[in-house]
Image (cartoon, rainbow, N blue to C red; front, side, top):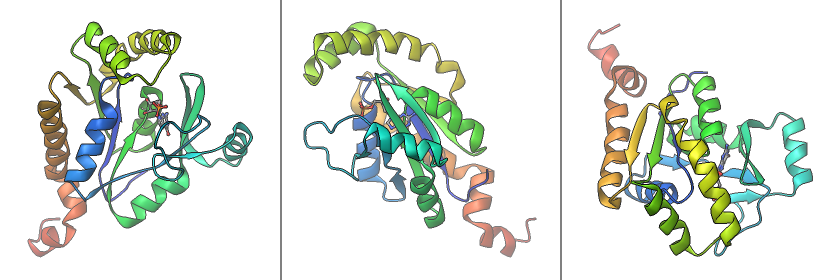
Length: 206
Ligand code: 5GP
């Protein structure tokens, strides 16, 4: 599937800092837009329906799967999450660069569907640091933290399927890296041809 903007897919084990990095990128770069996923997980803390996620019941999620409403969906930590065709199509029609903050299974599916997609994997600097970030976050019960760490070991083993890797030992450095990837992608010949077709035509470059 071809698409005029750039599509970035960011995956990471939970606690690696993915959400904070993507949030900072979105604040700094108004040309990058998020795609809001659907999930069967209940809202946490200050989350608002339609902003972080569309929160739906398992039956509603099933109905969307049946109606082929998702470009990809996956079960993560016991809940289902999916990127709806509508969410991604809307961003694409706007011509925006889109960032998908999804799990590694979703990232792999998106890479197969969208030839232009750029996949980025965020790694923690160590297992000790990942554990202490999950504990400090205080969002999850001890058993959930153990489950997330167990899943993290499986997730990091998938890193070789990704185009770029960021090691999040310092937030500022990792954000710099993420911005650099986005910027470099925009300068690729194919991306420039898509985004600046008029200039290429005026320069008689076929
Ligand atoms: P959380 O419950 O912490 O918000 O998210 C759990 C995991 O699900 C994270 O890795 C998050 O990126 C991932 N996720 C969120 N939305 C989607 C989606 O639409 N598709 C897939 N495959 N994963 C998602």
